[in-house]
Image (tube, rainbow, N blue to C red; front, top):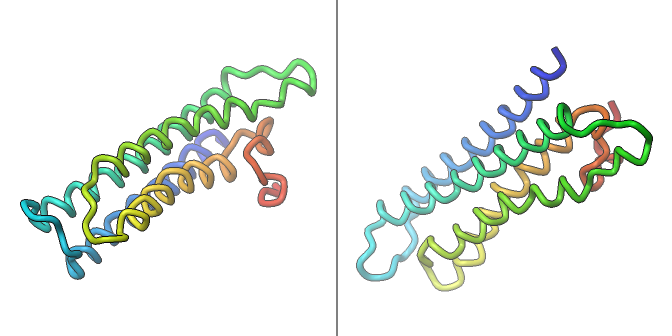
Length: 154
């Protein structure tokens, strides 16, 4: 039963970040940035939202991969077997790749807005992965994510 709770928790975190992307799209629709020639606001907003959703989905996939590996693949025979932080960090590559692709493929809207775009993609990708894995890692590996000992007490 605890497995289902963790999986549902990861889904709730993912849904929260999907809603964050949706509301950002609504905000951009009302406050349209200045765009380069040849791009309509709807095209740019669609591209921005699409890439932001890719960041969230890639983080969810990485979170589920971490959960599956930690719960059903990694076996603990002695206490040293619990050190799986390199695996956790390696799974960060999936959302990081989506974030980098998002920063590259979404056209810059206004001067100086590139940084804000990339920060938004970073929040949607890495923060979603981090929160999902810190709060919903299996109990044997619940302290593997960075700073999890300070956040997770149960």
